[in-house]
Image (cartoon, rainbow over all chains, first blue to last red; front, side, top):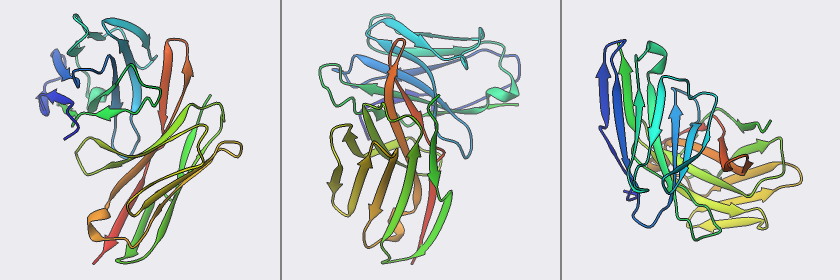
Length: 115
Length: 114
């Protein structure tokens, strides 16, 4: 257990529905990342927060995706009008801000299945 | 554009064997390289982090090296055990417009036979 938690761990939804995932970081970690991982591939960067500011978004993050980190603590990732291609593992990772090591600590992930 | 490649994609070895996993990257302008372990259906566990100024890091039976100029890193696992069976991912951290981003390889799936 890295100290980063994600909820839910599994989500099955029908195409067209909206889903929201939550990530709770390690308390002193001010940097938070979202990744998507499909079977047999490494994680792909989606978006990055430093405190409550969303500083970068990948081109993978289409208009149907939105992420927030309202108070610089937990973060949510919402997918609207889900498509079958959204089926993947969604991973959250956090980094302690006052260190130069930038070591990432990952949560257990949320596995999304769109039927 | 940074590309990270891991070879081999899969590896099966008998218990007790020493083994080397390879990671290569195309852009040497990296801040660090991190090796992770991932068990099926689970998140990533950090194994070793090598800063760009370092050549290697060791933790128990694991040793990771970094040759930034040639764009290569290796993860050496000594005296492999069935519990080492997992996917091993390497990731490089580099600058980007918003700060930093991490690029992952596709991983090496390791199976250690008892």
